[in-house]
Image 1 (spheres, rainbow, N blue to C red):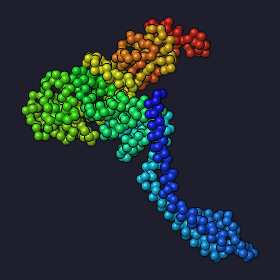
Image 2: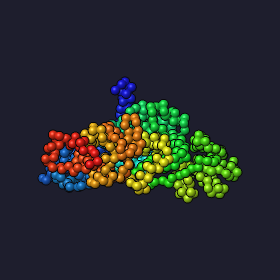
Image 3: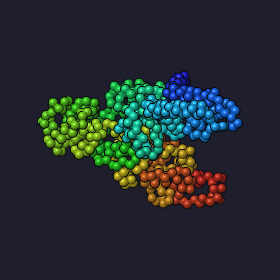
Image 4: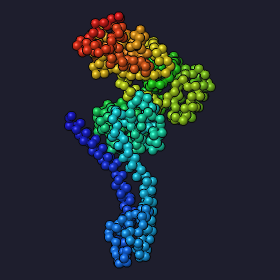
Length: 581
């Protein structure tokens, strides 16, 4: 660990220690707020006990008798707590009874004051915040699984959270809005999700939320305020430079400012949507495949959009989206007409004769009215629209939009692709370089194996630890992908899984065929049914299952075979029978 890393570690520890001290102030807050009621109660009790020891009584023979301190303390204890055992050790005189009567009323007043103060404290906002902070810190500290720290639980954070939950990944949420934090607790997740209402710009709050925790595997900044996202990127880079960071930005200037702090993954929804439109223009099947995989397990196959490449497009609204799409369309050699202010500069003649229309303002009502006006002029227009508010979704769904941009969902899907597995993100980066026919074949294979709903997406790393049964087979130099992806019960049937990518070092092989020869250290990205994932796991770990799918030989699993396998090695025996069998 170099000097800068040690300095960053010390800064992280300092921030965490300061925040933990604040999170531990609950006890001191209770003592501070309850100080006066406790002093009153103790004073009443002390005076009552002292009075009983000073007021004389009589014993059974009628002789004067004074109660000792312990007896007085005992009597006042059961009297003040309303238990009331009786007069001990002798019946009280009228003076003692009068004093006890006064003490009873005083203790009732003291208890009422103390209980009222305690109830007021429980309703106090600062106390509840301190208590929630302490409970949140303890929950995060106890996390034993890798987790993602999500700053911002708007629509993008919610979509990402459900996608991560579907993969069985843990995450922690920080949002400045208490209502959004309450929404986390109300959402139906498979595991409890720690959530804190706090400003993500506070490094101490991020430290409590897990920045610096040994199990924190990534930080995601998805708030609606780009300055806050920049602050999260900066904090993560300065305090924990080894933790990957992904952030949302809607301008190139902000993306450049974020890039000054390490190499965060910056997602610009307008830039990404423009890239997606270019991909859809060149390869409709490729865009369909990308959208399907980015949506995660459980997503239905989207329709294959076919935006027109020949003809003129009209873009209404020359804001962030309009500028990006104008640049991207012109880069594809498409003529573009820009209507900067569609409310004042609308002209039916501008739309007449166009083949594509973009309603890209930041107002949903304006976009819907623009789409309706464009459809009235030409029903055959390919319409692209921007949806800004989640509440407008039913209206846009009723407008027959060919391509809908929901910035928050674009961000969530892009972040999911980066966090779900690096192989998926690498596949997305390589996909635009493939032609439409290739992408269509991949979609057809997935449809045949999975149906119209993406069921499972996972990776396999061919290492002795993760695939122990394959070690000898891989060393033989004849370990073919098609032989591996066979059913361990009936090897004539292929598994319901598609190998989307094999990564060997920095070299990516997209959708390799059955004859592709695997090597130790390869990483494979697969999509298919959960049953195929379980069956493949059996092949990766059980020597006899691998022997069957590779050679067709049923290897007995008796004690004798296990004894022989220790001396000879099953994997080496398999390598001699790696032919079709």
